[in-house]
Length: 266
Length: 342
Image 1 (tube, rainbow over the protein chains, first blue to last red):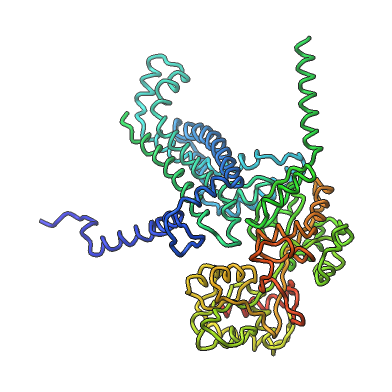
Image 2: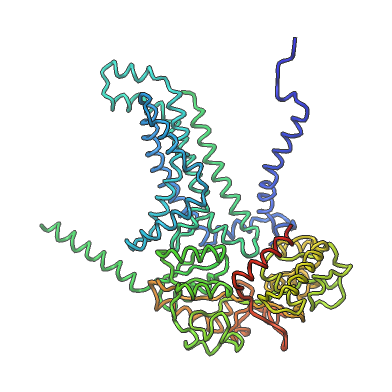
């Protein structure tokens, strides 16, 4: 009898897998390790120290930028997830009709458009709006982030909806539940992990964004990633490593929450 | 009724209070990242009771693109001298005549009337410097004040020479090496420039920006680099010295100008005057580690910068400003550059 096909038995599998892991994680490990460097150098180890964390913590610009990033990410995540949930319900809880595919495509196009194109478009558009209204607040960044986060929030929610058992919702309707009650007591609780997943994903995507933020930001609207980018022209110190490490932990934390929530047995 | 009047007066008070905070003044600065001394900003804020925000950009192109579109909310930007003429021609800057301001008397003579802003009608110097060669003099004992060590690499430095990948600066250096002038379109000179660069590159280790790191670790023994960067390298390793080529070298300057659509013009002008004060110019230099073009600021510099040879330009040097060349010339240079980078 022929042995069952198993990718792990292919020659070179282990080597390739280890190679991929090293390429993915080695630079990050080096980055984290050098955040504890006592030297000002990124390349020469000078003993263990937490001074760069202390320095970053007492750097007002870093704290300001971090708080602003979080503020934008929270708002963008909530609004984009709300919109994405409604879009996902509207595109799955319906009979198929002409143009439905087109709607799917429209919702996901932002994933395909190069970010720089969106950024330049938003720069030109918002610049006009800023001149007309005179308002230059954080609203533009929040709106822009909400917009590009929608497809990221939409995908896990739609996936969850498609995997859900329709008969439960039908049963609710058969038992004279109003559409709202059926949604409130059946659909929403079942959908919840999908919504949370979308929320976390949108949050992380907003937190990471550089290109669009750089083009849309007005005076005094530095976010953490754009602040970090700005440091590159001059010598980088391990302070950047320390900030990156904290940033990394934050992202991992969010993803971990997402993982535990979605894997909870229902 | 009473509640309504109370609410109305509360709202009125709120409006009044916010307008008061506006009146106290704001200033929005758009500058290169990690380039603005927080101490300088604090001092300006307390001196003039103005709330200052600093927002970063990472390239001349990003800054230009954003300001062109308008609606940005910035009052001040800090373009490099080779970009400044574009800003002026496109009408993006306000003619504040900083050359006539009180502290303009402190400008060093060579920075009073630069080609990129004749008469200082728009800009004041922020930071400025030269581009030359950093060399480990414990390894190479010869003359370091020449481009010859870059374009005809001596045996000691073969395979250990780095060149920063700045197109204009490197091509200007090679042109100076062959006795030409910046932005020349003399094809004889440019052919020599191309051959020199292509041949010399074989003896270079890399074309990289991370000079401070790699000079420190000994991966590079020499590099074409900016003076402020070499200053830091010398502080880490006293064997590193800065050579200014006798064939001629480039001066650069990031310049601070007020934007045409600035909302806080008066504060912006105050700031222009403020940074031409020797003590304040020294605060900028202490942070960014470059010279500032202001006479008398040396006295306020930190000890390790006061007599730094990297920040001095020797009498009688052949210096020129780095400028933006006309498009047809730039095209030629880009072709040469592409060939070099291959």
